[in-house]
Image 1 (tube, one colour):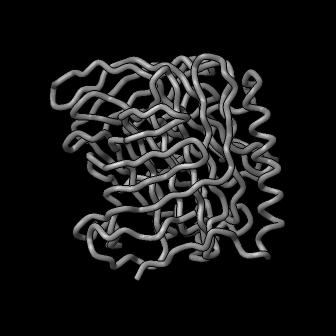
Image 2 (cartoon, rainbow, N blue to C red; image 1 turned 90 degrees about the vertical axis):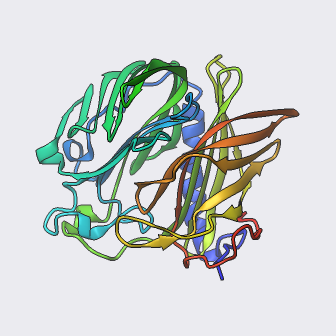
Length: 365
């Protein structure tokens, strides 16, 4: 029997969530202005001691076969969040000196996940971030170059971003942005070169962590147990970004951001739902021996928008304690209906589900 979250968080969490909402609303206002270059590519270890982790990511949701999507996911440091950390992967005496990085596409053997050291394996400057041999990001806003090598996959893309970035959170303790931009380049898989172009998402974040104080690895973590994040490609150089977070036994945030390359200001909608419609027939076991029944078909939405997604790529163990993949999407958006592609990050650390394949479950609102 799976654990379903109630629609509203418990009363004792609501004051803290109100404060968090204040900073996400401040981020929404900042998204309407040209990017101020206040964030660069440096990891948390090169910044103020209040920061305990940093994040770099590339999400391209709509590539030709056999790739279908392209991802780079990098977490530097230890977050202190249940959904993202494996405490035993960090050095016991320095949980800050860790990089967990993955790169993947939907092609066969186009995937790698590596645990690295910031000090030994990373090379960083304000305009350059290098994660072992897996990936490099170079440049400053608005122009970036990203290179990846993972299994049989090699990729090089350049991205020119719009003047305004999307601020997810802008606060003294957590700052998180997503640049939207036009990309072009090529992806090579087993000697076959595929030209790629479209609209992508390039992210960076830095935040506090309890490990800044602890300075040692610990199995005590904040109970962020559910994380679902999607980037959906929309015709006309537009994107949908959908996020849902679950913690302390309840959904604590659901929002959707609608953005485009044409200069229209981002539009953010608070509230919405996510439901798993069908799961895989058998559990998937990750690199640490944890078994999960992964979603096969799902639905999410809010006022004016519904997305029904069906995974058609391997789900890669690639983000925290969860998975990254690409999917075919049926979308209804403000009266439009179309088929497109999406990219997802999915972490479910609730009681492991034991339901029959194909069973419809109650919505997570």
